[in-house]
Length: 253
Ligand code: SF4
Image 1 (cartoon, rainbow, N blue to C red):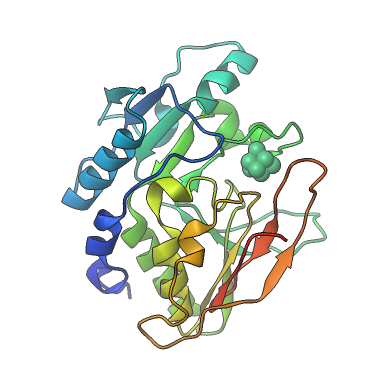
Image 2 (image 1 turned 120 degrees about the vertical axis):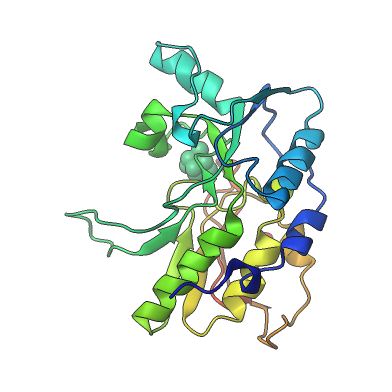
């Protein structure tokens, strides 16, 4: 059974966060898509994210789902280019999933998506070839974080055993965090959860939000540094970080 979302995270804290521009991302337009205006919290978040990019054109398209925003481009390369410069604010009603790949050496796993795609431009990125991104290559922030975490909670309690939930399978896990401050909600949520554990995959070095967290959360769980692996400084990538339920990370040295 799903816990009421007001028990999951503090919407007051979510609304109080002051967005900062995300490094490497400068959208020329922001689309307010379906679900971005359906609660006061979502409206407030959308408003403040727009304020972080005063030069961007803001388009109200409240009837269009996040993956149906029309970029008016048929050429795949132009579509991708325009998509990387378009930020879509919306809701995602099936953001918590279990992967179902076959033939991989890696096991399948649970993952969740408060973001869609990624503002960075790595030439080797596999996301551009995935079905969802190929047809909808916009950068997305999903404003229904309380509902997404309520679903994580429901799934984890149903499984009834320690279970990792990955953030970073279909997006970079932290690239847009300066805009949302979501990590400040995610770490305490997972730290205090009896079963759900958090794993964040990122190449983002903007970890200020995490470094600002207190060493203990409301439930008294310890937040500490566990694992940092440098992925590739030569490629300009900063760090590949693993955060698990009660774990916080720091930038690569
Ligand atoms: S950071 Fe990751 S998700 Fe983003 S473009 Fe690079 S490889 Fe793709």
